[in-house]
Length: 271
Image 1 (cartoon, rainbow, N blue to C red):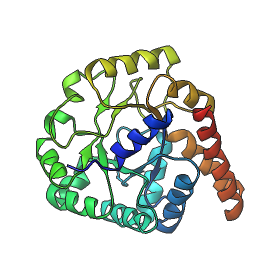
Image 2: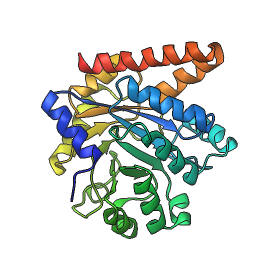
Image 3: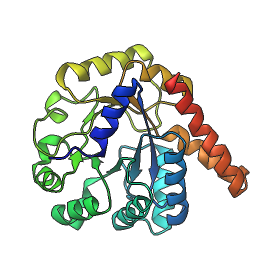
Image 4: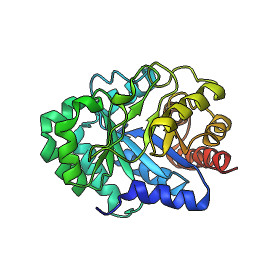
């Protein structure tokens, strides 16, 4: 099977001896058009992979900041089908940046696993995170993901046994998402020693690239984590910055300031 964009990204970064920088945004927050513009801004300013949340009414893994983003997106008409439309629109002028969806099982099951996988592949999605669906319960979904060349990204948290995030099943791949602390997104940061131990635990059981998320709040912290992992995922910290900037800045000022914020993380990670 042809390697997807995620595999190609990690191969390129390994050759360049660089770590991956991933950000998260909720589709249709605060609107479809602004969300598309933000995806393009992120990709143009140093993001290696985009993690896109499909809006959901009960995002149980997420803290207050991302819960607010989900509510804004739902109020703007956001849904799983609209998220796929958004990805397809992004693909019209960017066929390189990998996209993974992050969300919950209910909307995917409602759409139907086969229909979802077919539509996601057609929209240019490369993989997905399903926060409330452990691998041991994902056989039916994995079968359809594999059929269309998509992968499910496993979540590895300290509270989970290895069978919940290690599998050689077709349809599992991309990278291992290492969560070094127990709790929702936007919670307290772990120390770099705790993060390094969590990454080592993941490396001892998996040969996939290890990405670290949850609690990566500053460029300096992102840089430190990038030295022990294959990359970092920054979500809540950027959404909070963007929320504040949208309140205080005109549109064009927001765009330029947001681009600089993202570039600061990229520069720190590459330093």
